Amino acid sequence: MKLFIFLAFCLISLFAETQNPTNENCEDCQAVLPAKRVESELKSILQKIRDYKKDKNRELTTLRKKIDLLKKTFAHYKSEKEYEIKQLKKSQIKKSTIYRKNREIKKLQKKLALMKRQLAKKKKTIISLKEKLSQESQPIVVATVVKKEETPKKWIKITVDNDLNIYDLALKYYGDSQEYEKIYMANQNKIDRDYQIRNGMSLKIPITENFIEQPMFINTAN
Image 1 (tube, rainbow, N blue to C red):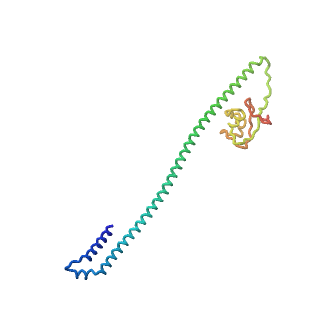
Image 2 (cartoon, rainbow, N blue to C red):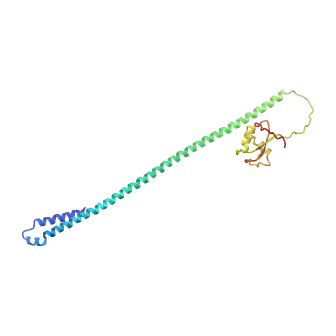
Image 3 (cartoon, helix red, strand yellow):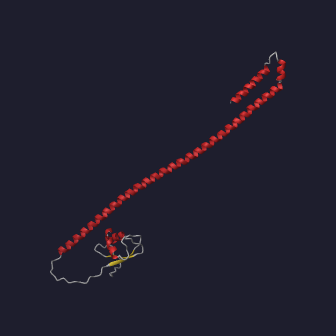
């Protein structure tokens, strides 16, 4: 801008000198500043002004392109960060939902275990009451005690499947998962002390008073 003002000032000064030469040195001025020279000077000054404008226009165009590129880059960066923020919010919501569901599941499992224990106690109470009633209803008879040979224990033979564990078998055949010791005692040669069983294992299930599921074939061998 300063260069443009300086060139304009020079142009105005030169034009004024050509239009108003002094009387004293009129011949000298015409000799020094002929019309053709003034014209060439004016043309050179105008050309410099044009060149200056072109340079500034090129710089302005370059700056505009850089600004447009920066705007596009910023818009792309902004959209990426907004997407990342949305994904983080979704993951946080999912985590909180899963945590809440897990707590509800744990509470239900505790209630279920409590109900099973209560049910087992009630079954034991019913069995003891039945035994008392049967004893009271029988007449007292004095008789000699005769030793009898012990009959072999009855049991059924099953094959483990569906990834059942020893507690599931106790619940299935005795109605109480706490009766797993009966199955363990009958199969000590196959089941370790950690009570782990596998699919395909052949096990004996003793038949007791609490026995529930009777298969078609009952084995009475030891």
